[in-house]
Image: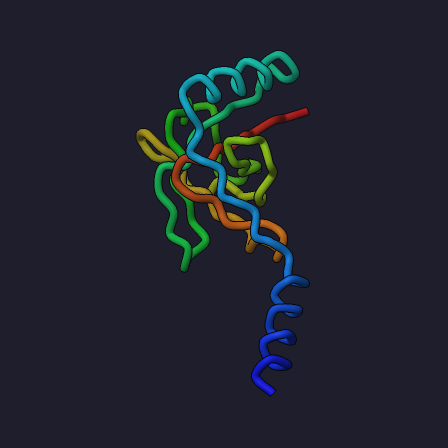
Length: 124
């Protein structure tokens, strides 16, 4: 009986997809490369870094970005340091040194943004 139960448990765990490891925070070199790549494709593109997240409110602070180039309502794409798209968000407020962005609820195959992820606004 115990052997049968163990076989069922092992069989079920083998069927479950392995969770994808979380990418490390973006490095300064990765950030510079992303900025250059996006600016070549779209001179109006802006790339910042997630500094803080309030998961219960679906809010993220985005810094290291020229805040004067943003207005409330701008759409940004959150990505991890590997370039995987996580969720979209909308700028709620433009602060002195950061943006407050309300992000969508992630689907089951993704995750919410976290500190060290990237936020991209591209116009084209």
